[in-house]
Image 1: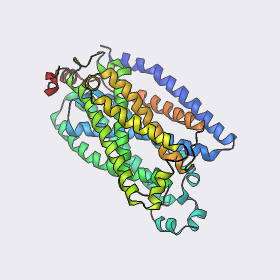
Image 2: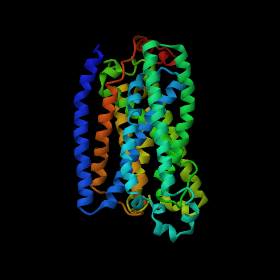
Image 3: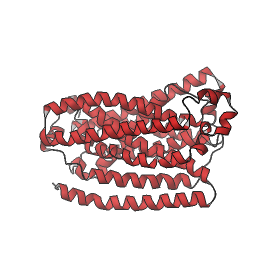
Image 4: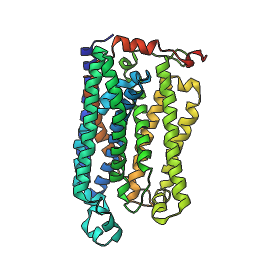
Amino acid sequence: MRNQANLSSAYDQPQRLALIVGVVALVAGVAGGFLLGDPARFYQSYLFSFAFWVGLSAGCLALLLLYFLVGSRWGLTIRRVVEAGSSTIWLMAVLFIPILIGMRVLFLWANPDVVAGSEALQFKSFYLNVPFFIVRAVIYFAAWIWLATRLNRWSTRLSETGDVGLRDRLKGWGAFGLIVYTLTMTFAAIDWLMSLQPFWNSTIYGLVIILGQVLTGLAFGIVMLNLLPDLSMGKKWDYKTTPIPYKDLGALLLAFVMGWAYLAYFQLLIIWAGNIPRDVTWYLDRTQGGWLIVGLLIVVFQLVIPFMALLSIRIRHNLRVLGLLGVGLVGIYLINMYWQVIPAFHPGQFSLSWLDIVLPIGIGGLWLAAFFYFLKRRPPLSAPEKTSILTAEGREAAIP
């Protein structure tokens, strides 16, 4: 087994590569977006790219909170991944600055001339105004960074000492943190995504975004278990020999796929049945002029294929196959964020820019560099924690 120093050096190369790719892509995106005279499209592409990567950070934080709340062994398998992923939130706070700079380009309610000509926007201005928007964003990031920092610090201490009292304290923080995360992310989804079309509203939109983030965070954790053998203790199991906690990841993935699909479907059903023009328009903008194909791709690859695949024990209990499925889920969530954001600016007409490719790579490169930076500073799982994973027993043990 490699020691901590060897683990750190093993992550140095991917960290440097991710940083270089991220910086080059971001510089190219900024230079191309402004020098080629299309700053509006730059901000649009930047927003959907940011929404994806901040969602991945938040999804990791939510999984970490959930693990400490329920205390299940499945959390040990991806614990170091979600700890490192949640620690990247401070980077996303810095990367939020360009969105503040481009607010008047992105949000109708941030443009005084537009607000002056709309009674509806004037009515909503008590909430949708620039100073309050900034204050709320500061609160969101402060809460997430505070939770991630405290949980990571106590998690390290728990691995080193095994303190039962600390475990109980983390359980309480898991419950409190999930409440804080749900409230803040719900309002963040309203501020950063739903208010792009401020005449539309949905009471469960925040929960749809939250379930998508948690699903993506879990899928990313499973991918990392396959790409970084040290995290899965260097083992390659088939569906029969995989320890129970790793099998539980497949069941959890299926649960989140179904949860996200349930909320997304009933949001569509209720809005479509209500047939209120200002609400239905949001879907019309995303189902015409080529956008319907994108929407159908999301349904197929974020629901149909994962759901059908995860019904099989051979897939649900096979970590390597789950890794391939995880790659698809992470990729389709990026397309989902693209479908959420870009039609707000190009309703009913499909639009794809080279910036929609370069900017996700740019932000992603910086995110992965930060992720590996924090991952190599996380202590390895303790011997009792590894034993707990490998010797876990449950009803699945009787399945042939």
